[in-house]
Length: 464
Image (cartoon, rainbow, N blue to C red; front, side, top):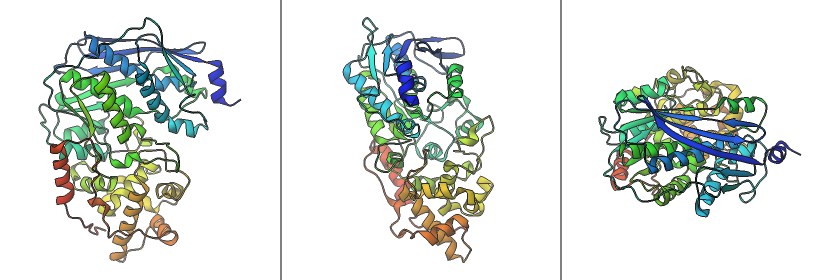
């Protein structure tokens, strides 16, 4: 019996006992109580700093409903320890349509976790969700509100900085939103012109009992954090009467990590999830809030091209998960996310500018060959990280090789390896001039982005 089957037999139930929403002078708090009987209990918390924000009252049935829904996505981080076959909800009621929706999010949002842990299961069998008789029900009456303006969730990487710079934002009435802020994310917001009073800070605490189970070898892995961000940002948009939540997820997030399987590290950043979330909130939450990704029409190479011009962020932005541990965020320069960022920026910033950002020429690192092959599609799986498509990576590599050869410079190790083993792609068809019409932008937002994409020079200059 494998670990998955053993834990499901030993711990057949996961309980969502309760949630609470309360406040003091400094913050709004969301508190949850989960339990895996005969194993442990969990009490995670989210804290939203008040600052001088004009929040709506949290003493309402709507705020209670939102707190309950945030708990439904929070619980997945704790349920995954044992993958108990039953989730039992004591504190709210879901209809069959809602249960199916949540099962889909859990199943595909945990696709990477199932794959990396060797778990074989199905949508029908992996879990049942039961609401106990007598559990509270919620009023789904539409919220009448004159909402306007934007909330921009930011994570410190290149994508959200492009959104901050391109959208027509009012730095006095619009907001940045950061979960578990670090100096890098706060600095990016400040560079964009937002001061402390327009930066929403949310602190999410992980229950220590979860960390103890991880140390003991219980099931662990990737969870759909972006879905958590979706529900939290939606709630805050309601509290602040903001109309738009503008994410910075790109078209590249739709590509699977395992060839031939629907296993996607970025599932909750995908357009499929974005559409599902809109449908669900329109049915069951009904605030006048629009959740969309401003960069959805673009690929990663287009975003890199736009970001290359934003020199004010070059020595601040970070995307490395390994290097994000602790207060000082740095590029580790040994992981897939670092190498992808290096590759995708290389047609525009290689060599001196790019080396000044990362502190080293990653193309000369022989230890990165395995990751390099995964990123280019020459391995069984794409790295389980937020990286671009094979098309984008191969185009960027081919263009950088062409740029270097134009000035008769020797190719660094990884690029030389690529040229010797794989054909260069045809870069005369510039994929930075594409535009994906399947997106959630309105006419004004599309016009802003189109202007930036199609008014820029379609050629890529050598800057070695």
